[in-house]
Image (cartoon, rainbow, N blue to C red; front, side, top):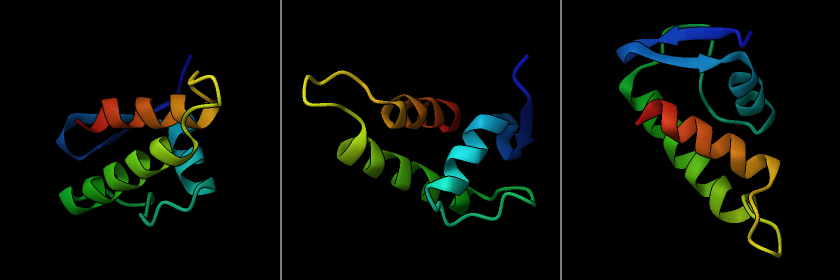
Length: 76
């Protein structure tokens, strides 16, 4: 079972997604409820990583790409 953490606006982020964001230096404090501004920062960073590291040379999604897409799906 995937552990989920509930944040503002009814958004449920998985522990794996939070660990990924921490490892990739998303500038957000995950120890408190996230604000709309935090979600904007998350979307901008996830979109950037998706563009830069999201696909391999054959345009298949990488692990980074899959995680970024899943994060963007949760917050939109």
